Length: 137
Image 1 (cartoon, rainbow, N blue to C red):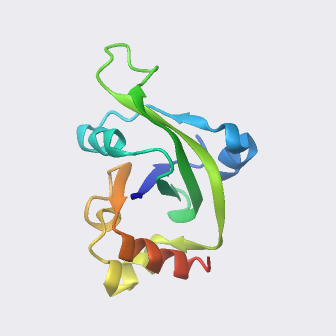
Image 2 (cartoon, helix red, strand yellow):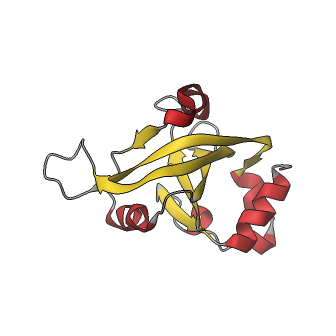
Image 3 (cartoon, rainbow, N blue to C red):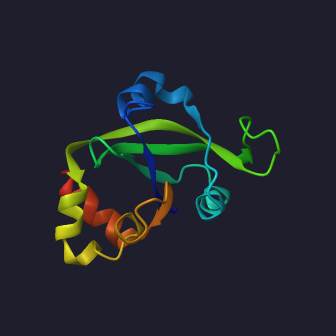
């Protein structure tokens, strides 16, 4: 299993929106950065992703699961980019803020800090466990 982080502005699509959709999931589309798109292509069914609220909150709020791996993004007229389908998996008991992540030296290497504009990124298993512990799950 691989671990990831996906970002969304809560005013556009929040973790609560994702939660309401439940197990049927929703298409994670609109990614137009080539590096992020390549990460989407690497995702497999049942991989887990931290759901990060960007801009307003800057916090990891919960976890979603990949329920359908990469397919052509229906919002891409040129058919160059892919999307995945994600479903709600779990809430973090305690959301983990970007500030908390930056303060933790063990996870200061994460792309969330180094490449802050990237909307999809991998998370190594050690960092995944640390963030889960920080989120009290």
